[in-house]
Image 1 (cartoon, rainbow, N blue to C red):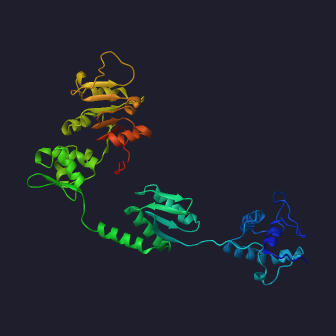
Image 2 (cartoon, helix red, strand yellow):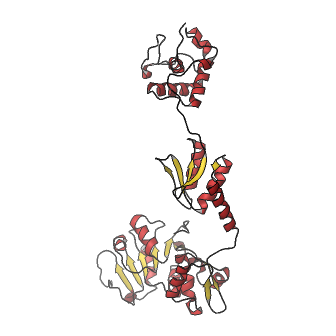
Image 3 (spheres, one colour):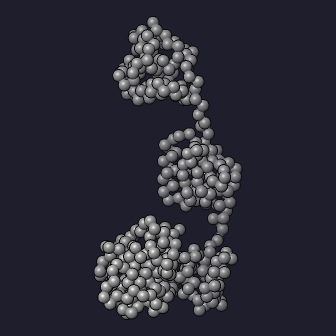
Length: 380
């Protein structure tokens, strides 16, 4: 009877990569020496490959390897291989790898960190959360941890997730989460409201107040400007003011939608006239329908329209003046655009790359005149 000195050699013999004479054979030319259970085949094959590259077992792998050897004691005996009754008496040839199985959530260098041993059951919900998290969520390869931005959304989610999955959460993270809950339970909003002698923005930071003062102030005569600046500056409008405001739906977000299927582009023009959003910049792509452009042009006199698209055509004005109300641009001229963009109309549901960056950075309002509505990110 043959008795191998190490567990690794028993595993190799079972896998068919070690002979009775204790010689290693080519992995790709062998079959298991015993009849393996279906659930053991891939494990034994993986273990044999791991041993062949001198990669030690972890403590859990070691426990499983010993169990496998013990389970096939009878078959091994018939093949002339002796397995001791006390399988724990057989040592390992390579020192076991120490795996840090710590599961903890902590703050380091301004990031919320989540550390845990590899587990798809934990990774999958983190990846799902990262798709719409309010703050960056990413795997940091060097430190082997998941890093979250220190935002309310990330802290709340990480604490709830960590509690449900038995993470050790550091006291400073627990304290931060409690402070967020306390803050959320308080009535707080940065909101435009009407007062007896004008308007005010509750809880407005000093910089916002100064900006408003530079753009007409909080008097009753500046109501339209205050309503229209809400989406751009990031404050909300009280329900009472929205109830009486014209085009209230277009005031709530920087990016808004008007259905082209209604063939009613005049709604956008009326909004522009109400809130003085001139000149309108019409971003035309190659797929922009002629009907859209003709309907938009019909809202203005020829002298109020400027074309910065493609080659010069007869009777097309290309000089922008104080009287200009509508400017047609294409992708090329938009990238080189240096003028004001109080209102941009685009005819495609999505914009990408440099165009998207320009619109989000420079446009006061972006209106998607398309057949289908899309979900706009309020953080835009």
